[in-house]
Amino acid sequence: MSELLLLERVVVESIAKGNFRIENIQNDTGLDYSFLLSICSRLIKRGLITYKLGEYKISKDEESWGKVNHPLILKNEIKEVSENIIDVFFNDKVTNSLKLQKVYLSDKDEKILNSLLDSVESFVKDLRNSPQNKAMSTKKQKVLMWGYGQYSDIIQNTLKVVS
Image (cartoon, rainbow, N blue to C red; front, side):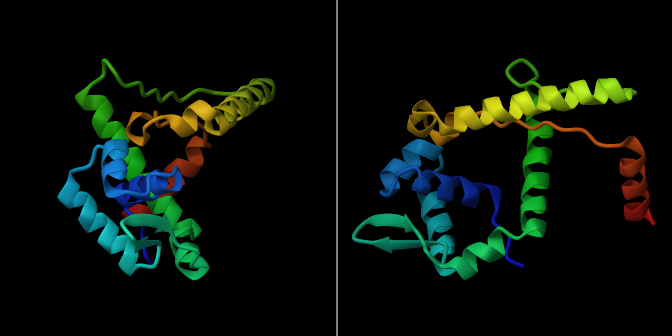
């Protein structure tokens, strides 16, 4: 399967927001010009973007997009983002926030937590759909992550990895 690296996804997101020229993509992402050209070239070869008359566009090639949006590929992308969030947090705790807690939840507590997470989901969805979000620079976006899992499932998964 063909993974889409984090920086490739950033470029695709920028183009999808309407940044078609390389200078606009560079401003939006903050990536180095020559590095950006390399990423765009790779994305063209993979059939994910096109280049015509000085403008990059998102490809309509459903087969290529189906490959990079496969659940296993998306799982690996989430892992890459998670690892980077952790690295960035420990390098700069002042401007970044990361919380991890292990707690017991009663049935009632779990219902309350699910309700709060639904509220967060709704809030984030509204933010993503707002006109201000579409106008903001890709590099200025915040990366949010939330959810919870059963500690025993995490332990069992770890045991699978080490055995």
